Amino acid sequence: MFQMKHMGEVPFHCIHCNKPFSAKSQLNRHLRTHTGEKPYLCSHCDRAFSQNSSLIIHQRTHIEEKPYQCNHCDKAFSQNSNLRSHLKTHTGEKPYQCSSCEKTFSKNSNLISHIRTHTGEKPYQCNHCDKAFSQNGSLQIHLRVHAEEKPYQCSQCGKVFSQNNHLIRHMRTHNGDKPYTCSQCDKVFSLDTHLKSHLMTHTGEKPYQCSQCDKNFSQNNNLIRHMRTHTGEKPYQCSHCDKMFSLDSYLISHMRTHNREKPYQCTQACEHLAEKQSFEKLEKNSNDILKVEEVEGEKVATL
Image (cartoon, rainbow, N blue to C red; front, side):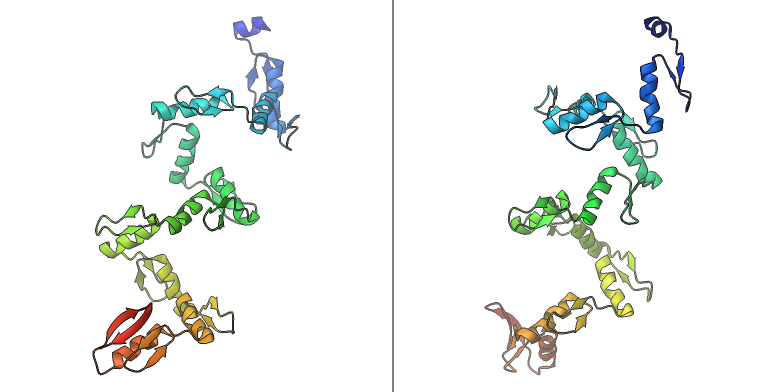
């Protein structure tokens, strides 16, 4: 056998793809890629592998064995290939380049995922719905929606989320963090999507068009609300009666008729009003010029 390897002889060929091998054991391992046979079973879980070496690497995830240590930082890895990939974060090496936009990557797998942004390929299909994804990681995150799995919990209020980035965004409601600043007016936002929507107020851009009346909007949620004027959809239902509303703000105003809350006070008419619209109408119809002030948390109209 040593003689065959040394002389470059390859007497064993795969009957499925004609790939040559110098050893029978190599051919047998390769044949499992065609047959799907996985004789090496993990004793800790139900996973099975076609090669014993793959099983050994997998078992390290159970015993948390990480023999491959980075000599630049404290990170350790269960596989040597993962260590090699990690080392590129220290050297800055990015040998994998996209032929479409010249962007470079430290890992070939990252390049393959990136290329799908050009081709539009989405090979990872959800078996519960019609959604497909360009990356397996995105599919795994999406599957939590069906399993109702929410592993990320807020330490402040206990709210749970299926994605870590959703938790990070939520935490800003507690700490008041607004990392996104408008370059035009210094206004700050907690979400990048809110900043993008705000920037359209400066540019005048209104990319969202109604298919019924050609009206344009700067934000998609404004278009969705507008579409209800055409469809008659009223998704917000009162829990006390059967009334339904197209906007949540309308429902909030209506709820005050049940709890008798009247936060808008007019000193001229000696009236408390439940709805802001009614208050503004009264203010407009008054013969006197009214000034709106907030007194102890209430809207008050005075001379």
